[in-house]
Length: 67
Image (cartoon, rainbow, N blue to C red; front, side, top):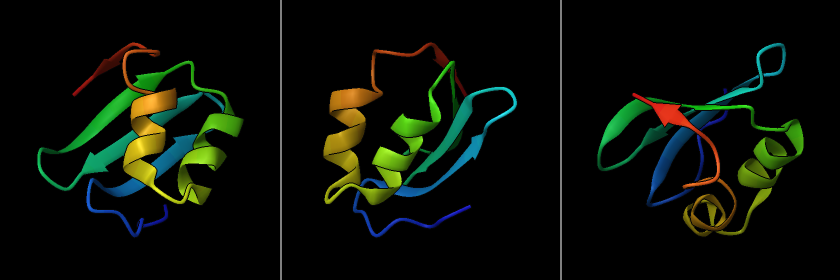
């Protein structure tokens, strides 16, 4: 489970068997689970220049979630 160098996201974990992306945020904590996320989106997040911008563009409001 990688820790990210981000001012918005502390760490992220991906469970490929269930396609759940679990994210811990710096401000609001977590974890938050995002459902049905392809592995390519997770890899994009952990390799993004800005994890917060990537999250806002490719994850937020695109996948169902809960805390």
